[in-house]
Length: 501
Image 1 (cartoon, rainbow, N blue to C red):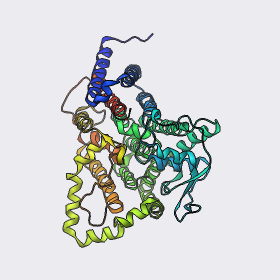
Image 2: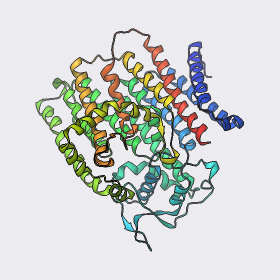
Image 3: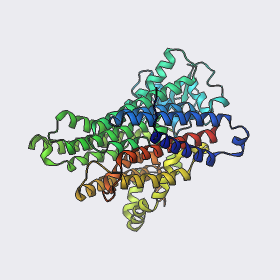
Image 4: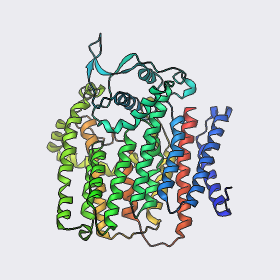
């Protein structure tokens, strides 16, 4: 029998209040006319949150298990609630996942039969999904249709991404085919296996790190992170691998004798993440923040730092390939029509230093736009977002990062160095997008810049700005912050339901 004491009931009531407030904020006139589906999902999300809070109180010393349960429960809800191919670029991720499910680790950009256009061969069911993008399952017939294996073609398939980032999605799609399920299960099972991988890597990261476990838990359940992980997007894998690398850095920071195996995992996680988002290769610089006395010997110290060179070499070599592969899609024509060229953009900045400096300053002034996009879901004509959630979450996370009592007090030098590495990645992401997505001489540096690219950087915030000026009951404070964090996940789900159903 589950025994909830008064204290736990109090936090469950706080969670319910947050859910209800967000739901009322998002309801439209149409929702008030027929609120039954919204009420049903509200009850479901409340039960999931209440169970998660209870599970946390029983496993406060096993935060990796708590993270796994929260991500899985809320994520599975998102798998079925999120409309068809409604996540940013999910259609294209779907195509590449289906190609990988056939055993192909590379893509073939071929001429489409009886046309002059080029594309990637897939199956007809996936191109039918494209016509239903943005719709929920109640407004389409794809959930009733069997898988149609008739060869079909799509103009883009993320050929620039490494194949391993689509393995979990491909397994789900393969199972749907193997079990002869309806076509919709290719989407749902692909999303499910992607979610399981994200939850597993995050669980491993939290278990490995000896410090900052709770902040890593809060970062990992960022609503946008769960939303992406419960889709066919590769952003969940990239984010979890980046957080795994950070957890190994924290392990090195506290471990007196570092093992070669752990150094290998640290760099592998960085490379696998960096091949998806190249600026995150700079996470390897964290090795310089590790005390020299923690290495087994001088040789290990030197080799571990020299390993940064092949890490960047691998990343840059892949980036060169990916840049060429990128144009083998609708983007090739788009780049030409909009005068997008990385080489010309670089030369323009070099020849206009004042303009280049102004663009650099934009990485600061445009930050509120990026922060707002942490609650920016979907894209194109199907976009929906919530500035309310974004603003409140920014306040919540800054307060959490500032006052939550950490189990390690980092010195000023380490914090400054951590800030510089985090800032380097931040401007690197913006810089790469500006070079590869903005037209030559563009004034805006945030075109094509989405908040999901920065999700792992949130762990730097408590690492840098935390203070020990306040004294709190850590146990109660942890439960309160977790309650609020899950309230935002529930808010995201209710936003999806009120907008899309």
